[in-house]
Image (cartoon, rainbow, N blue to C red; front, side, top):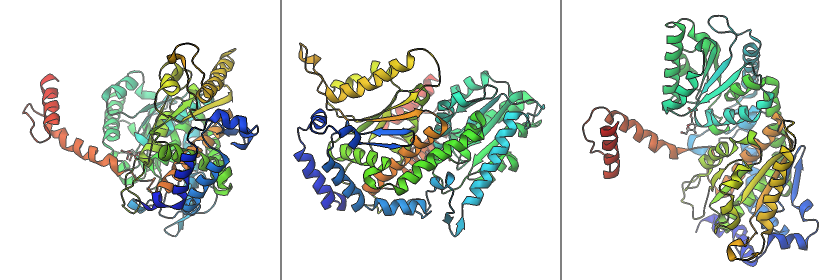
Length: 526
Ligand code: F6P
């Protein structure tokens, strides 16, 4: 047994879980008329109601004791203070500094001056492009931006640009291409005029195969459309932690926006990786996004664990994951603007938490990351929510919505919100069979409800930082490294090995029989 599962805090939770067998959330409400107030937290415009969970005050007490026993407070301070908590890569994890205000030293040097300098350059560039001071080769105002990047260099800016569309200028459309599937790039380029298109290549390493291939293809497109080489530099920018490779690619130094090895890809939205967001909605709004995240950082640093939103969300995650065997967690934004949130959180959570050895290299004997998935409501109600209501599995879910919409379309928002409230109530309360057994709803399905007043840039910052810190707390409890991703390397290496084998028609024998057979079928039928 690991030190975690042997620990008194863990054992106490095991015993408590057994003692809670048969407990019903609805009954917990009957027993405590103040439950909603007692099990909800507010931070400015953000409300977290976690009362519809299978927890009592005793559960929270025991979970908080676990967080303390696992050194969550110490590890949090180490993160904020720039210590190299990403042990396998010997790096700090300082995404909080990107939206912070205080000096933080890494290797003896304060990181804030370079952060501020980059923010200033982002402002000059985004203001210039938006106002028309920075123009295309032919002196025309840019109408379109393509962000080429993948994973952390794509998901955050794509989510934020989509979510903040009500704040965007209609005069500058921002497109995202991530997949190496040429269909994605082809479709985007087909609708654009190279003469007024700005291309951003976003890659922390500037070595990612998909991004570089897409970037080369776009560079060729610019070349051909603008006339061999003429001024394509005006149409290119890069965001990277590897400036030299961006320069080698042909991007002018003045157009390279840096970030640093102490920013993990999936935590990089707050860095220059947010440049497409600034182009879309303006730098003031991007800074509002940062300010929302900073407010959540301050809350995380200062609130006692019992009152800390990220800690509570994380503890509930551990509770269901490790004590109820819940293998997945659903993210259900009742807001089309947050349609990309499940995909963003998939990378944030699953790339961080998909680990099976501790930071010390010991195999774990408990479950770590859950499968994160989801889709916006009410669409989700007409596809997979059936399984949450009546299936055999326990799937905790986060319902997320804004009280005020960004549109004035009659009754739509009231109908949307009525469904939000109805779903969480139905999942908790269930209903007896009106007739046949298949009509019965067992209820007792846990949910968190997260409401913001309005989905402003600030509110989005609060929300995303909430999930970042949730993931951090969970991984600290599990003793795993939230900031590396060695698991993605094997497939990359193998793809590089297979690629040359796709040339020519000879049968392939180097792999297992299934892989050989698939490659041969592809070669015969392509
Ligand atoms: O393959 C996973 C990954 O390394 C992610 O962690 C990262 O966000 C993504 O690839 C893109 O990497 P880069 O920004 O270096 O192109």
